Image 1 (cartoon, rainbow, N blue to C red):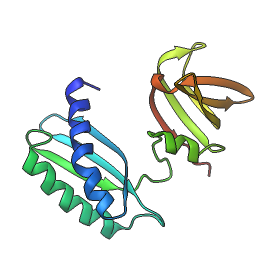
Image 2 (cartoon, rainbow, N blue to C red):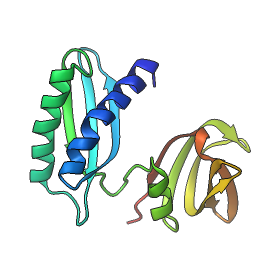
Image 3 (cartoon, helix red, strand yellow):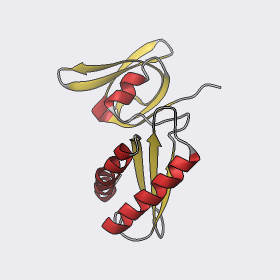
Length: 159
């Protein structure tokens, strides 16, 4: 992710979180991607009992107005608002804690023991001397994955 995309994501988060708080919803994640001629902004929201299509539609309208007023991201964009779905992203400490015991897919920026992609069961989420660490069981092998190396993590739904 470019620095500009990260900056836009943070600005969008700052604008959208108060809106969601007022609707008793929470922001799960924001993705901001530069396409050929426009931006693609994906906002994932949730609430107790799950979000409805009407919730997504209403938040889309309100969030779109906020983004337009603040010109974030600059220029044309497509906005998608949805629930996190079965393969919900894990981005916050409370996500990792909530989904201990679930199957996850974790991708890291630099190899750990020669591996960049881990698919297994999240068995713990620790604070080791101020460094957040995921413990993932991959086929009986336990890997310690520092959270600051995680590029992307999400639940893996088993059918």
